[in-house]
Image 1 (tube, rainbow, N blue to C red):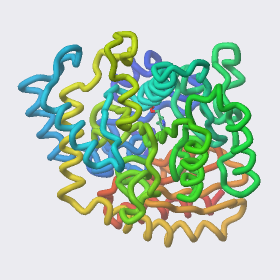
Image 2: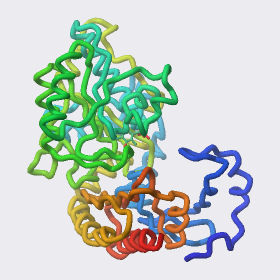
Image 3: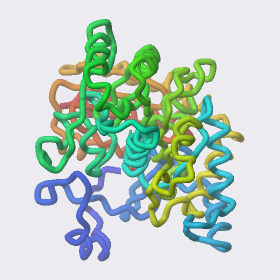
Image 4: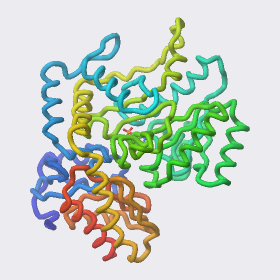
Length: 430
Ligand SMILES: *Cc1c(COP(=O)(O)O)cnc(C)c1O
């Protein structure tokens, strides 16, 4: 560990680094990307042989760790029979089985599954579904969404417009983005009354309320409790609008429950939305796959003799058989292995070990929920911290004012200690 820059980078890296436009990166000033050769469990193997303990799990997707043999074998088997076929007029076993299993896992009658290939598109589809739900129901003019400060729902045009207005890209793309109603989560009496007023005054324009339940992820890893979601359900019902949970981040165990909308007895919030979106960990972090799942009531508004009442959407690679096979294998692992217990153990260990950060200077908050550990700072030098983490042999990517961990649920106690230890060391030696 700690020999950064000693070995020559591989030639593919030297030739290709100026060709690949990287995400969320000022290409001129950002540190060059690390050449990665392989992944293994909760490790990232660099081209020079160094191994980094991964604290990010590739944007929270690799919930079973990288290269899980069960998922690998399922994808390999599927590759032999049918890597891809379109869902236009056709249906294959991996998609049918996955939709059946998702419907059985989700609460209430959430059970009509529309597949896509990214979380952003799953959210866009949910928004289209909600708008058309009203049109199909004979109600005109409901095209706006209520969404919340601190929220993140994706990078496409429709979804940027429902992200946090300050951290999102609202200002930059003003004129392109439709304006929605972005407000505070109903955390207390005042914010609940304000939301109630807003819904009352604008009811005729509002297609739905869109929220990341329990944890607002990419907007800053902000937590709220189940009572907030119960209030949203009640307000949506009172004002006759739809409630959409964006579980692209929270789905598949990340908060300690299989879904944030799971029953309270299963660790969830016990609040059932009308539409839920899934992505990220859906395929166990192996292939792009997302889904928008509607309740029977929402689906029934599209069930008609009128062809114009159909949901007019269809991503080319929707329901890709390889991705669905991987997702089915991922669900097998949730059934066969004690994933949610592992999340509980990770939660306890992170709470214990990250607590040491509380005594360091400029720390605003330390919070842990499920397999999400967050240290929030007053101010933060992100490039310097990123480099220091690599020196410590870990892969941790701070953003905004937070340093966070969202490890694989299969991470060993020692590797998790390496991650928390590196955070304590790096933040303690600023
Ligand atoms: C990541 C994320 C998205 C966007 O998903 P992509 O696959 O990046 O398009 C949407 N909503 C939430 C809550 C997310 O965390």
